[in-house]
Image (cartoon, rainbow, N blue to C red; front, top):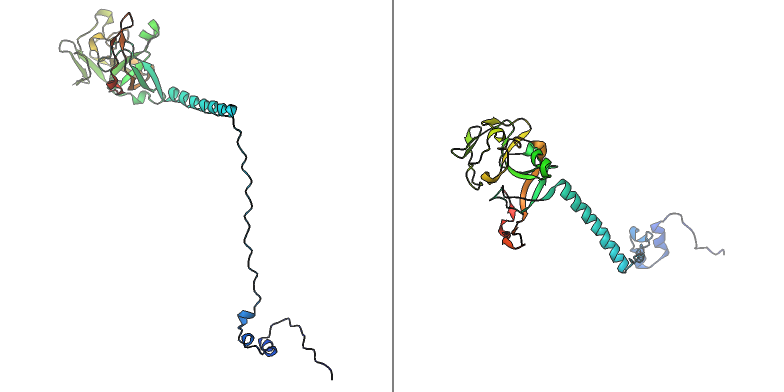
Length: 257
């Protein structure tokens, strides 16, 4: 009798045939999804060890290099700031007392930002107008009283200043406007400010060489170096022996107007 070979190969799964091969209840109770091949669980990805960070060189030379590197950048920023944004200028004289004193150091908004269109009545400006500049290369600081197209008039008997017929309220002056020059050195009033020019006066009206003095007169807007923004360091006065006769008033540090 030929022995029946029970070993066989299927290319498909026949559930009934598989159940007939076994009498095991657990196998008989298997569901189709239980007989599907199990997917191999993905192995956890091993983290690759990070390459050791390159150690930075240490030592005095390296620290010195970093300091010089930072210093160059700081100096570059400060230079650009003081060329294009602000300037530091000193006050020489008393023509702007009580607002500014001799020896004050001012922060000046540079004319790179403060142009002719920004000039307003009441602004305190630093100028390199021709009369003073040609004599001793000195700058002057004054207050803008009138701008182009406006008419300035000064009543030296009543000590009053008018712009376009309106009397100015000037709480910033040291004393009433009484000083005027005579003859060829005197301005004639009323006077209209030409296009592109300004009329300026010092706050210390009777001790100021300003637009009332004909050689100075109406000043070209191009002579404006900038607007005084703040007192950075108040001045002090010394006598011929170097003794301080007027100390710094630290409370004066701040914005000027």
